[in-house]
Structures are given as structure tokens and as C-alpha cells.
Length: 81
Image (cartoon, rainbow, N blue to C red; front, side):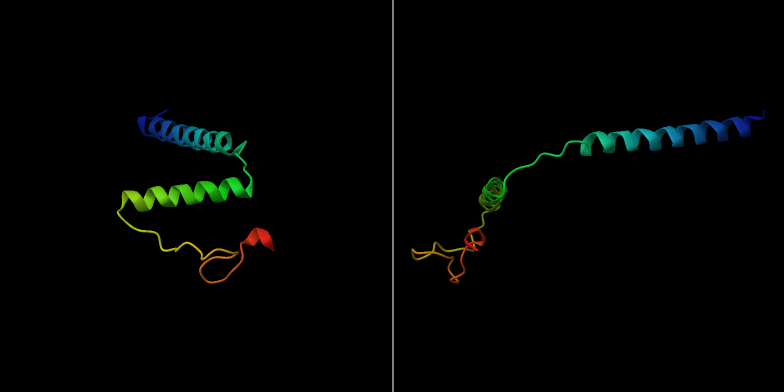
């Protein structure tokens, strides 16, 4: 076998091996995704947004509601529907 054929064979073997390794890595990451309740997801999103705003010196764009139900625009929370 010529040197050129050997280099091509090694290159093809490495590229197939890399594709298989990448596929296996993706499969192991997506095999058992974490799940959480809607309330937990909303709480985490609020906490992450609060930390982001504090780290970047930004205030929140929401004002506390004036008591009662709904946000500052009078909309009720999705859970109430």
C-alpha cells in the first residue's frame, strides 16, 4: 500500500471514530434530562434574572403590584387560569 493510501485510510478511520465519539457523548448527555415542576422552574428563572441584573447594575423592570391579584398591568398569574 502506498503512503498516500495509508494516510487516507488513517484520516478516514480517525474521522469515523471522532463522529462515533461525538455521538456517544451527545447520547450520554441527553439520556436522562433533569425535570422540575413549573413552580421550581419559575423560581429558578426569577433568581437567575435577579442575579444577572445585580451583576450588571440593572434594576428590575417590574414594580410591585398594589396588592390584590395580578401584576402592574392587571393581568392574573397563569396558575390562576
